Image (tube, rainbow, N blue to C red; front, side):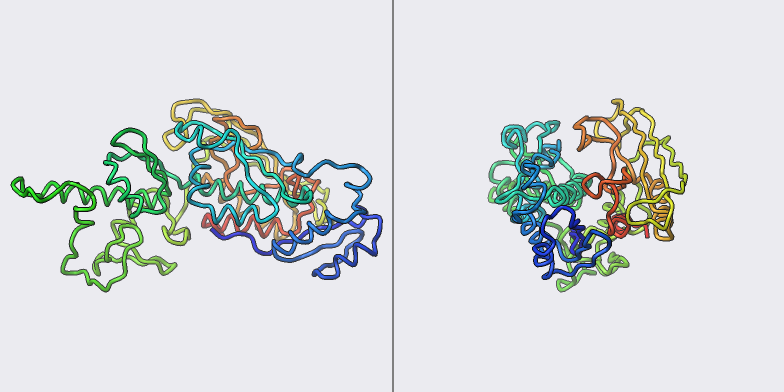
Amino acid sequence: MEFITDITGIVDEADYTDPGRLMKILRSYSCEKKGSCYRVAGTYKELEHLSVQLSAEKHYVHSATHGQQDASTHIKSMHVSAVVMTYIQQKCSKELTKIQGNSFVFETQPELRTVHNNPSSTVQVIIRPQGVPKPPVQADYVRQRFITFYQRTASDLQVTSVSVSPHEHKDLQLRFPRILFKPSHKYEVTATAPFVHIAQLKKFLLQNTLSSSLVQPGNKGSKDTLSSRTSGPQPTQDKDPEDELCPICMEPIAITEKHTLQCKHSFCRDCLETAFKYKPVCPTCGKVHGTLTGTQPDGGKMKVTTNGSSLPGYEKYGTILIHYYIPSGIQKAEHPNPGQTYEGVSRVAYLPDSSEGRRILKLLIRAFDQRLIFTVGRSTTTGRNNTVTWNDIHHKTSTHGGPTCYGYPDPDYLSRVEDELKLKGID
């Protein structure tokens, strides 16, 4: 997954009693003044360091004169799946460390080890600052990064059960390091991982089952274990040992079966067809090939209107209002709890009525038609299950308040949402 590397922060000098001290801090950064605000551009680490400097400034109004509480009190906690969070903590620790940085730590309540065996359990994720208090905007940015990563991980995660002996269990852990194996019964383990890795596991187990069935009954020296079975079919005549390996089955790609995508990654044709039945994206880089269809419930409506009022940061333009309506209904096989009811939603989102805003609107209309804007699940804001929620394409649902209130001003919002849409194959 790629993380946002270049961001922009807004610093209002009205929040500081000594403009000279503020300018001394900002002198080391690339900034542009507009009215009473400074627009500071840089990498996430640079703006993180700036936030720490501003937080420590003794004349910062919110901490010096209003007795503002620790920023952690302003961070909304999130209710997430215990299964997904367990996988993230154990198999995505590097990505999680990048998100929280050195300034925050993620805690779960209750502890994951007490609930991970229950597939329907949820936990509360709390983001706590480390060291000096952090500005709410910095904490909210970390929260948004985590939500984006969590949603992308959860959307591709699969859980399956396999019957293996304790010895085979250890062998599988070595062969498939990206799969999280958890014993469930004496000879059964639960495997959790993205689709590609589960597909690899199933193919490996199928090949070894077929191989063991061919062992002669009188061959007393053979044992039916993963370590003694062949790891897959022997290369056929049209395979060269020096050929590249298929990232899905980990076998040499047959010359006549090789399929190379536009992104230049190659796979066995059958492996790729199986992967594309689940999601038409490259299993290696995630680039969309073809049309990606989401799990947005049917029957929804997207209505667009405009008015003459302007949004902060886009004073020269009017405003585009996007009215979304998804009615309540019954969940289908593609949803978390098929057969159960789900609660619909009505949402309004805002875009500037500029050329760039209208271009983003056209992309959002395509995303809505491809059922990518909403999904059914647990709301990260209310904690309710079986409800229609946003699906990894962020919207501005407020006209004011800045990023912490999902509103404007937010100079880089349009470029960010364009990147999110591009990940879905919409550009």
